[in-house]
Image (cartoon, rainbow, N blue to C red; front, top):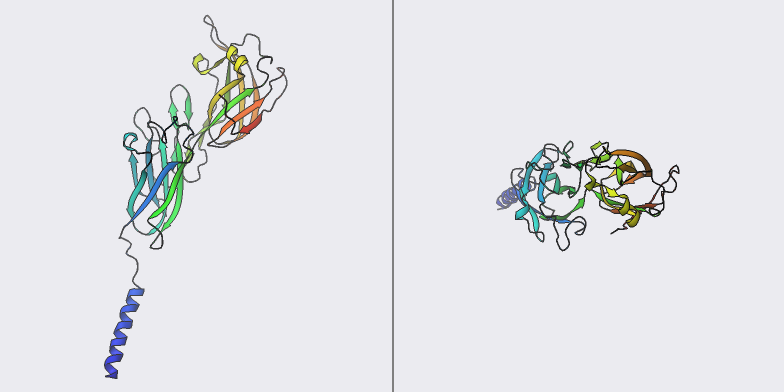
Length: 300
């Protein structure tokens, strides 16, 4: 009898030991869910809406080594702004997820084509008449560990704007000295950054922005400049030591447009997702200036 009990106990112990040492099936998949929204529903979207009109939503789940595990594009017309969810089945492990909201290019291309987490980047927008920028692009990433101890509803992903709106308030615009013959004023930023890396969100490309001499629709007339004392809603993305300058232009129906002069009004850093106002006096033509930065101030 004792021998039988010992054999039963040994068998039970063996079964328990085998169960404890049974590894997780790497091929088995488990459902994981993310809820997607914008971090600021009033930044860059039409009044009363929660999602930018015409923006698609793309997500990429990367493996721990950076390879793409899966990716999907949710088209603009299929999105419910109140209930945008990412639902996937993945094995337990470590992952990175990147989610972007943007508009497709004129030929239907996406803002970025996923390949490798460490080297992927967003191209930004390419406007034929205005160069490149990050307007209407929202983005966020998250690195996460998914195992049996983690809820299937991992996180709310709030996408953040990849650009800011900068307005220039010239306090003495009605009396400041402008080069003789000036008909229009434009604010130019150099270097002008666009696009960003997926992993760390740092800007990856830039170009030297120049004044527009062929289309006055992008400029502010001297009359408006002196009356409104402002240049509104200039699109700028995250950058360091960006140089903002006002360019004074002469347009004529009979002669080619010419640049009469320019003046640097601010040198410094710009962050994304902010309404920023640069405010100051231009003063006399030869006086150097550095406008003050007022984050959160919105000019209308």
